[in-house]
Image (tube, rainbow, N blue to C red; front, side):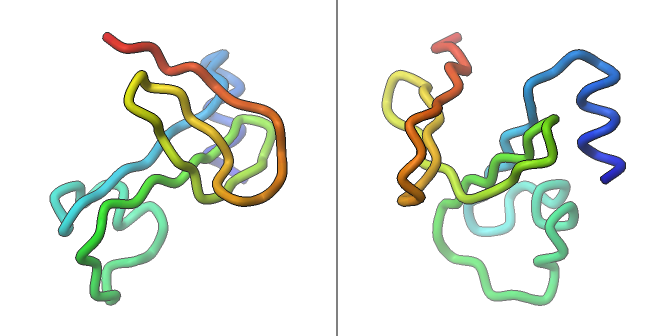
Length: 79
């Protein structure tokens, strides 16, 4: 996948996409959701290793896989 290759080339772990009520057209377009009704906040993790999936983000900025039983997480910092 071209996105995963570019993330690896730039030495990034992945790309966290986020949207709420279509305020992020890049995230909506990247996942091909242009024609869907979107009214809730959502997060989607695209990993440089090619893994992707829904993500949940807690208040301190830690990204965790959503309901898939994995123990891994990525700390995106609190800025």
